[in-house]
Length: 107
Image (spheres, helix red, strand yellow):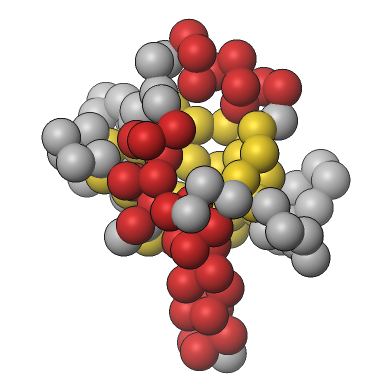
């Protein structure tokens, strides 16, 4: 089972790094509001770690990732990975240290 999840995470990272993602309307608005660029998403995706899973999400199973940009800006990126050529970004934001321990665990 561990190898299965590692394979999925590897695939998610590859999609992010290669720019093979699309935004939900919500994520597109949030990226603009929060000044998060495609380049930062690609950078954060390179070594992103999976911190939460949402198997019963509204439209398809999704997960929350934590990654860091080249400038060490932390980003949370919620993605849905279904049988598709593109990864769907549901939302993305810079985690608030008041709400997260080390950006990984909710307070």
